[in-house]
Image (cartoon, rainbow, N blue to C red; front, side, top):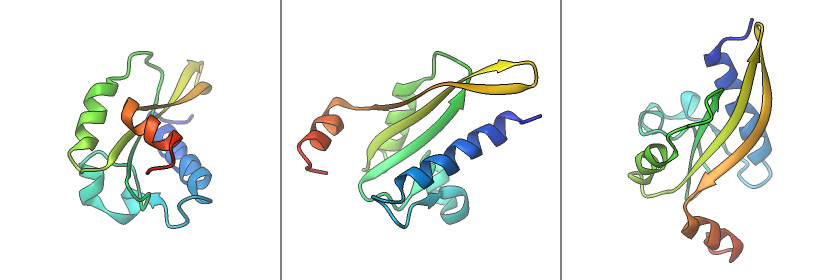
Length: 113
């Protein structure tokens, strides 16, 4: 049976792998920087982006609180959310989303970050 914590760590590892083309040095903050992990950043070495990962069954993740926490690091805050559903002893991914401030989104569209 996969535990909630394992589910979250697996999502972090998946996201690190997906980011490697753009950020070759990207790693989980758990292995790289306890200080960044304590500030709410789950993936480090991503230039100006502060990425917080959530893998939860809840539909109501507190995005504003997470974004504000990462914002204190002076990085563009991004929340990567893997929405899951539990059936029996297993979790199934229902969707994967990225939540960010509008200004970060516009900067990305304009290739300014």
